[in-house]
Amino acid sequence: MPIENKPAEPLKIERSTVTKLVITGAPNLDPITVFLEDLAPCKGKITVSCWGKSWTAYWGGMWDGLNIGQFFCELNASYIIGYFDKDMSSRRFSGNALADKAKSLILQQRREREIDQGEARDLFDEAEDVRQANSIDHLAGAHYTFMRQLFGDEWWHLDNDSTELNPDWAYLESIIFAVQQALRQDQ
Image 1 (tube, rainbow, N blue to C red):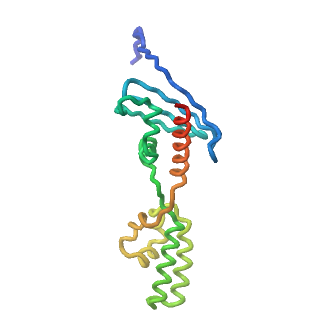
Image 2 (cartoon, rainbow, N blue to C red):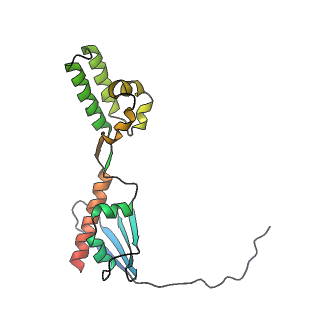
Image 3 (cartoon, rainbow, N blue to C red):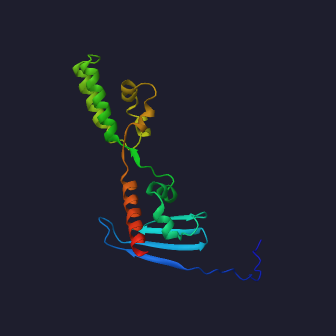
């Protein structure tokens, strides 16, 4: 059935004032572009861009008397990251951390004579292979027997113990700190 072309009703258009800042000179960061928009009293939106990535947050309940820039400066970086990317964590799974943990456990078992030298060598070699894992789920295949033997029946819970600092978190945190510094300087 053909789509009927009805006369279009006029679109509603609203204008607002947006402040754009370009921040340069932040250590180890490319130029940062910030768009600040105060939409109404206690309501504002910020968009931060750096090196091809952008993060946006809207707050509909800012503290009285603060514009979006002032409000952003009062917030904790961890809180802001939660708004910018709710799935990001300050830590992430690390095959290196898991391999180190496994090797430590193997050495402990060898010292306590629970395993012999040959078995310890084989386990040490497999622990080294675990370094390449990019998630705990990756280990369920070829390394299942090793993980179960070393860490027990519920070894998949080790993802909380086998982590490292997330460089994406640290990167975004440094961007937020630079934006906050620039906003304070601009006030």
